[in-house]
Length: 358
Image 1 (cartoon, helix red, strand yellow):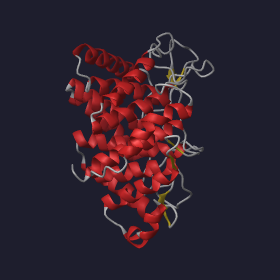
Image 2 (image 1 turned 180 degrees about the vertical axis):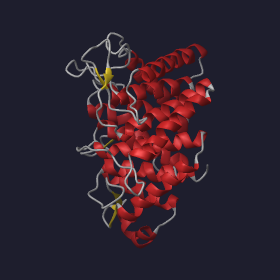
Image 3 (image 1 turned 90 degrees about the vertical axis):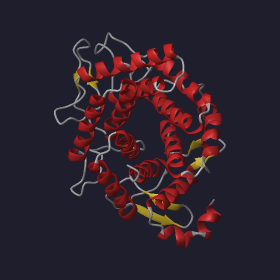
């Protein structure tokens, strides 16, 4: 791979079209891939690797370039053993959700039933995590008893997205109704939970000091909390044929563009640190593109194009040994490179590319 990068370096550095940019970003992402483990190297963690696979699937679907299908399959075969688990089921329910969505996306691209089956197995485990004694419903963030008292946004949003996605894909009518029933239950609970604030944004989770009367914990409105719910509502709207769900998604998307941006309109995380933090913005952009595909809005396209342009011009390092590397702060300046930063920025480039068609 590196020999190709060196050979084509002058052309690559000058590439300007959205498709060329996405191609270079996807190529650079693979410098952090460990084919023996089927995962991306530290600091890219377990759930982040699921997002990287999703980004590669989206890249393949949007560009038609199929060179990374073998990476998707390699990860499917090896990642479980590398992480020491089976069926992508572990103590972190949100981690499971990211892998379920990765395999649903891979199924959409390849139509391989084993990918869809993997997501079904994961969802069957997540169903056991629904509990009504705390906050009157919702899925636990973790199976670890130390953390189990927490009902948070992203885990429940993933539960909604997976349930509705499976309902839209399985062939058996009874299974479809079961999955749709879970998605309906999750959305009904989510709406009345209080997890959405007065600005229309989703906070991190619920305060369960009084388990029968949980309240918004006012913790950070992470961008991925705003993103996953968009994808979930798109899938539920498809299953229910209900445009009001897309209206609800649009309200959240516009709240993000109003409140979670720099003065120049570039998506910005409210606060935070650590290896997971750079992942969040890409999740939002990915799901904004999915919303735009079914409910086009010129504001979404302008937002995606503006972010992609800012990444390429202000948050990029051209490295002869590692390709076009993209950092954490899309408004610039470039800070550092790793698989998580690269995946997130690739999501943004792909969102802009996908919106060219709508």
